[in-house]
Amino acid sequence: MARLDWDETSYSVSNQKLDTQHQEFIRLYNNLHETLMTGTPEEASEEKATTLKRLINYANQHFAAEEVFMKDVKFPELKKHIQLHQEFITKINGLQHDLTEGAIVLNTSLIKYLRNWIIYHIATEDKKYAQYVEKNP
Image (cartoon, rainbow, N blue to C red):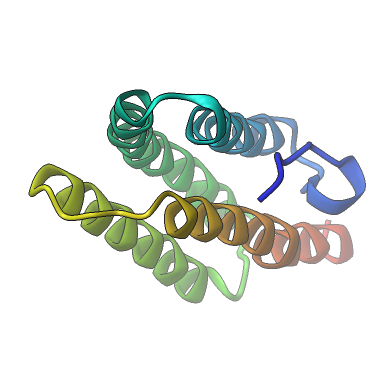
């Protein structure tokens, strides 16, 4: 798995606040990726736990802001988008629980899930509300 780099064309939703928040998701992913690829097993284990906590906290904050924005612009797929957010939180909570309970959370599984989610969610799902706003100013 490779690092993620912010690409305006692929990821921008034409909202500076939300773009900045999306960039923070990428930063969190890249920090985790770097530690998992180069750190000791102890550092990797600690970084997984720390990153999952940060992701949960940050995701809740970001999702709340994003959902307010979508509500304000009357985005017709708001309910579906909220469900996607809830699924992500549930998955990350489950991974955090597994780590706390001592279950093995494979580095590759975690990094692959996060990478795929970030790329798909921002570039596909979040782009839908950006396109809606563009067509319905």
